[in-house]
Image (cartoon, rainbow, N blue to C red; front, side):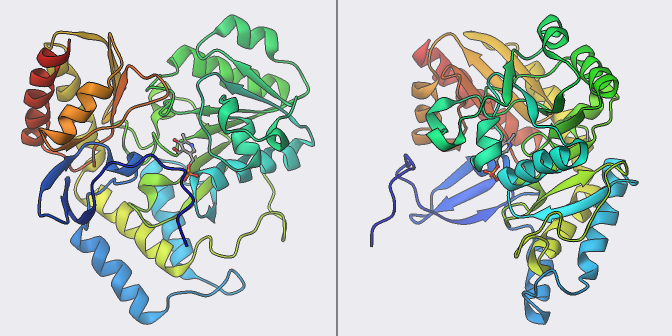
Length: 377
Ligand SMILES: Cc1ncc(COP(=O)(O)O)c(C=O)c1O
């Protein structure tokens, strides 16, 4: 049987990882500034993470959500503590799309409405509601297309005022837009969203799948604006590669048996991975590291010619060039052995390193980037 050919692939076969590095089958070392789509938070193959998952596997790998699983409570407690959302509840699932699907469903169950406000250049995943709220018709099948989603330009306060009315069920917005090219909602836009949601009885859903878990230098990116969301979706960095996702739910939402559900969500191994990630983030001060080194990274980039714009917060950085970034990206990979990402904005290079990155590793990138910029601009 062949694989269904939906992914464009680099001709590279990584077989091992350590910290910020990947090693391929020929022993070549690559600096990973992309973390496999922002997934690697605490670094590849962190010893504490390996130990926690292995020990759990030796005890019990799986049972369904029909029994008590204390690891779920431990994960929820630690997540509440580190994020500051102690009074919220956690529902566990397996991916970012699933988290958003559940967030949107929950909002609709809650107020009985179905109109959703989402934003241009958004990405929320590929399941039916999540992809409907994703502003990219090329990944929506006809069955996903609906009139119930209203797309507005990000940070356009006037458009938001004009579109908001009483029938709105929810607003879904990324803490920082990732796939769309690292676009940051302004603090005043987030504050306005919060007040309009309150005024019209709509739920504010913060998609922190990519920008959450410390990447922005805050546990959740939206916290920089001092607002609270009603539902927050998480995945990616939450499991450092183990598939796990979830939603944090405000106490205003009432749980009912059977309202949401999943077979695999919150399984023992996913919880072991999720707890290990939170322990390492806390113990190694990775949120502060993301903040400090993100600032260093952005400051150093400002000295390099040929950049149109740098957008970013913490270790979520978009470097917009004056031309498509494909040539620079492949030179970084093939010549300098550095993985970077791109975005739906073809000129924007997306940098999403593990949060354990050091200054030396950033300097290594800066030198390589500087030299490939000279070659291509
Ligand atoms: C902001 C955001 N939300 C949701 C998703 C979907 O996550 P997953 O691929 O785990 O379904 C992504 C994936 O890139 C994302 O960046």
